Length: 270
Image (tube, rainbow, N blue to C red):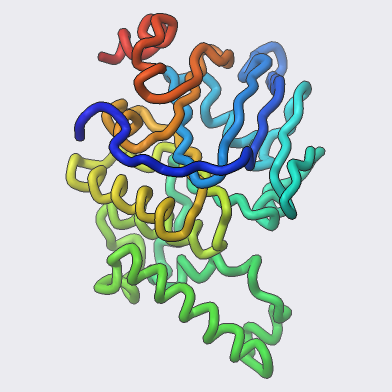
C-alpha cells in the first residue's frame, strides 16, 4: 500500500460531533477537551500512540463511557441531537455499530449464526415466538437469514457459512466480526483496530472490504488503526490523539506534515 489517500469520496453533513469531551478514571485523564466531527460517508481515522485515548474515544461515542465534560451529538432524523447517558443498546438503535480489538465471537457457533446475532435489534417477534418459529416469527427469521446471506456473499465467506467460527483463521474471524456489525445495517461503523494481528494479504483484503462497505452501503467509517500505510491509503481525514489530547486533525497529507504529530507518533514509530 502506498502513502496518500487513493479514493476521492463525496462526503456529506456532520453526522457525529464530539465537543470538548473530557474523561477521567480517578486521577487518570483518558481524554482532555477533545473536539472533532465525522461527516457522512467519510472514512475517519483516529490515530495516536498506545495510551493516547483512542479506544476511550470510541467507547464514549459508543455509549460505554459517559464523559465528565463535553457533549456528543448524533445526526438523528436529519438533525444533530445531543445525547445524555445513552447506553450501547440505545446508541446501536440510533444506527451506530461497533467492532472490538479483541474478538468477542461465539466460537462454537457457525459463521451464519454469529452474523445472525447482529440482527437481534431488528427482530420484532418476542423471544418465545423466535425460539418456536411460530407465526410472524417464522417469516421474520427467513427475511433476516436472507439479509445475512447477502452479507456472507458480500464478504466472500460463503465457503465457511456453516463452519464454527473457532475453526477459522484469524483473518476470516475478523471478517465475520465485520459481518456481524454490518447485520445491524448501521449508518456509522466504529472499527477498533480492524487490521490488528493480520498479515499483509489479510490487511489488503480488510482494506478492500472497508472501502466496499463505505462505497456500496454508504456507511460512514470511524476506525482506529496503527498501520500508517493503511491510514494514509483509505482515510479521508485523520484525528490524532496523544495522552488524551488532540494534537492534529486534517487530511492524511496534512497530518503527515504536522510536526507535533511527527514528534509524538509518526517520528517515533517510523
